[in-house]
Image (cartoon, rainbow, N blue to C red; front, side, top):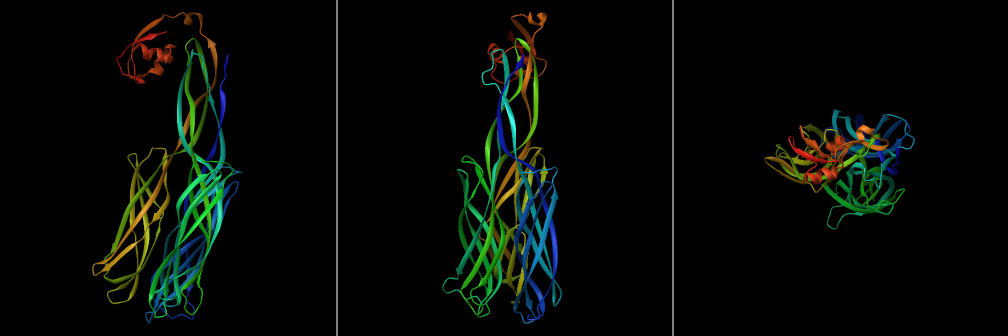
Length: 501
């Protein structure tokens, strides 16, 4: 006789590929004839822009540019600037053909630095890291028996797996006229403009991924009285992306990529207004808990059951943790005062150690300051957030979001000190190998096997589970537990058991 199971479809997004790709690019920049000879470089900075992302059947790719800028001092001490568009392109082959894959990527600018080749030429080097993850819709069939016969013993397990359930994208534009507050010197020359988008609130509402945040716009400019002045604004935004189905009970994770960024003073002859236009691409992922109820094993007390097995693997999120720390770094070079500081996060490094993972998240902090001789100088400091989390042998973890607070810099005869509050979200996941009963054949016991005593006495030779004892004796688990007043699922070695049959 065939054992009949009910079928239940489980639909989710399966991660078929995930890899972090790092690429370094360089560019030679000739200083225009309109600018003076360069004496020294004081700062290099950049903005990473993703221009295209593509997921094909057999490969995945992302490309863009780094809008790199360099501040240098001329022979007379004046601060000058040059810019360069440095392209990057990354491509990876997928492990198999995937017609309905969707790319979810996170790109960070790891570093920007520059040096003089000669007084009229600079070498700029940028390093970009992109984590490319591809998800595809997948479904699996779970088997169960809602009302098993009393003679059918089932060993059930419920796995609450948190998995990706839906993806969505939304592009939006921030066009703003930003004004300096009263009393702030006007902008004569814009020397630097950097951007940092951050999410402050996000949730699912039906099929809409709703998120709020702010775009930080940080500038450094020369005023009409030849002072170097920093300032920054925060541009709030509120947007939503539509997903294919309603996922109210899911959590939302939103990654922001900038696709273009422009900033220019309203006037070339001194102004307190800055015209800013930034295009942003939001990639939203909804994750939810799927309660996967499976039958690990089965047997009959009055017959022989030959089970049919089903095997598959599922990627599940184990947990999410938030680490907060005020990180510090310092330089021993004496300084009169700090002019400006700008911070961006680097790619996290991970190291396994005895069932745990140590995470190091470096921050890149560019500091402009006047040294003891009154000369403008620049230095890059590297404060580091360190965290540790437990992780299974088959698990992986990744930093999914980083939030930098306001940077604090102090200067003195003993050097420069940087303090920065950092919040980092770390997600741990693992591949679960599922081994479940999906059917089976029931055959009657032989006449000899069917004649059995009403009760058995048995001593356990080693530590055994009640399930294994019951299965070997074709006896109900509940009867064995009740007859021996057992409250644990495991029976110690040397225990004398009364087994009702």
